[in-house]
Amino acid sequence: MKFQIKLMLSMTVMMSLLFAVGASVLIYRTWKTSVDEALSAAVRENVMSVRMLSLTTINQQETDKTVAAAVTESGSNAAAVMKDSGIIYISDKYEDVDFMSCISESDKTVAGYRKSGDAVYIIVSTPVTGYGSGDRYYICTAADATYIWDETDSLMRAYAGIFALMAAAIGLMSWVLSTVLVRPISRLMRGVGEVSAGNFGYRTGIRTDDEMGALSEQFDEMAAQIEEYTERLKEAAESKERFTGALTHEIKTPMTSIIGYSELLLSGQLTDEESDDALRFIHSESKRMERLSKKLLMLFTVGNDGAEMKSADPGAVTESVAEHLRITLEDKRISLSCSTQHGSCMMDEDLIRTMLINLIDNSRKASAKHIYVTQTLTEERVCYSVRDDGRGIPEDSLKHITEAFYRVDKSRSRKQGGAGLGLALVGKIVELHNGTIDIESTVGQGTEITVVMKR
Image (cartoon, rainbow, N blue to C red; front, side, top):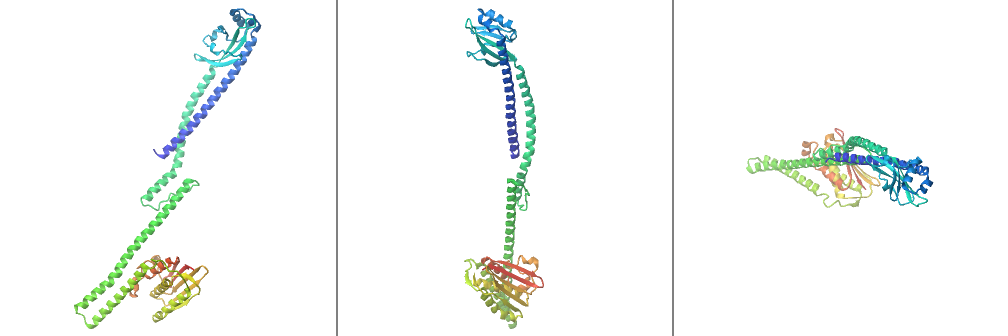
């Protein structure tokens, strides 16, 4: 059974039960009030009838027949007169009423009601003791109360009809209300189905100030996190695929050349000059293979044992790297400027050197004429910046620039000895130092790479 039907039935049963109990209590209280009022009126009538009787005459009577005659002659409303031994007088109108069951041994007036056929009578009995004989007489009066029961039956019939209409109305309102209440649950169920089917972009969009709204908001947040995580997995899979393809290509290309030239050398069909050219090419490709293997080894092994953090002067490290590379860069007509601030911070000095070397080498490969290296210190952070005036990086390449084997200009990078591992290694080093890396570049104007680490 669906939750909506359960909710509707529960609400209908509960409201109908409350209505039934309330109406029953109201009808009973109405009936009880009417009966009590009729009993009070009957008692008053009985008292008046007893007073109207000539009690002195009754006290002086010697026979029951004369007592009965006295009752009829007094003009009272007595319905019956009884003695311990039985009925002395009874009105013709109440011959079928059981008065004997209404008398009591007590000296007090007794009131109650008795059914006789389709009629209901309120019977009041008052005891009177004969003065001369000492006999106990009971003066009984009867009042027709059938109208009370008739009115109650009418109320019950009206209640039955109203209850049927109320139950139908309550059922309809419960269905509408349950539909409104269950609608967010239905949207949540649809959301679960959509997410299970792989539609991680589905959002319930329920915004209410209640528990259902809070649950829906948490569901949407969960779906967003799953979508984000899935996207990261896709990007990681694509990156892995690109890495594998690039690695295969980087190894296959020089190996193919080495094998081809070595076969030519073994054939003995080359001239001395051609043999020298082949040997030089084999040597060049072998060196490129060596550089590639070193880069790969460093990329995959750096940080396996964690960075060895020691107190060092980042300014001195930056100046040392710049001084080491300045002569090589000047031979290629590239100027290198360096600005530093001295102090101390916790870092892995060897990894920071590798990071700076790769950043500067990346600027060299970008055909820069001027490279500016800046290192600054604050109370909490150390910042490294390498800026050049090279050809820049296209915007669509910025998000891939730190991926292994990714090259903006594949032909130039390969000619310049690059394998697309420099910035990937830089990213790994920055990650080990819990830092951040920011790349700003404009095509044709240059690139600035900024690394910020905790001091």
